[in-house]
Length: 172
Ligand SMILES: *[C@@H]1O[C@H](CO)[C@@H](O)[C@H](O)[C@H]1NC(C)=O
Ligand SMILES: *[C@@H]1O[C@H](CO)[C@@H](O)[C@H](O)[C@H]1NC(C)=O
Ligand SMILES: *[C@@H]1O[C@H](CO)[C@@H](O)[C@H](O)[C@H]1NC(C)=O
Image 1 (cartoon, protein in one colour):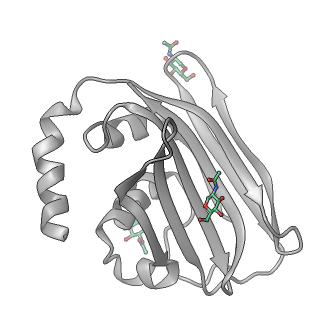
Image 2 (image 1 turned 45 degrees about the vertical axis):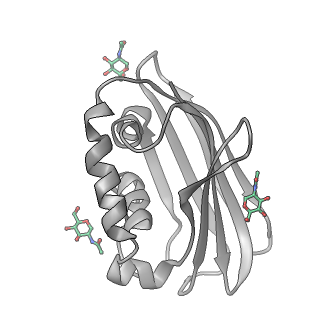
């Protein structure tokens, strides 16, 4: 599985030059307002080329020492799941060992712009600070085909879903 994934990355890399990546929308859905909320969650277009995603959580029950993340990437037209991008990880374990190849790829996409860059527990809110569309463009280019996508991540603490962070984007 891992070997296949690496093979796919390498074999698709030459396609990485063209293409265009666009953020369409972000939805930060709070499932349990007693547990957490968002201070902000938005996309901003500064100009034609500079667009970014920012969010900040407001967690009322810190520290967080266990978390499970369900991650799915779907095509919007037919709701088809991208096979490699349908997984669930024990986030605290993942942060310790980084052993899940696809989760690690997703993590590395977001981590440089956030304060999630450490192991559990988290005794602070999570901030994603101005993740530029260009950064995702570079990474996503080689890996997924053109299309309109929905990236759905569901975050569970103590086994209870607390929030869905859903990012809509288009690759053309
Ligand atoms: C877009 O805005 C960024 C940040 O202000 C700036 O660095 C960049 O040159 C701008 N690009 C264009 C095409 O105006
Ligand atoms: C956090 O980021 C720094 C600098 O990018 C890196 O050296 C370090 O290994 C990261 N820590 C974790 C736990 O990923
Ligand atoms: C996101 O995933 C969760 C958990 O699988 C699911 O309950 C929810 O309906 C999904 N959201 C969307 C917009 O598909």
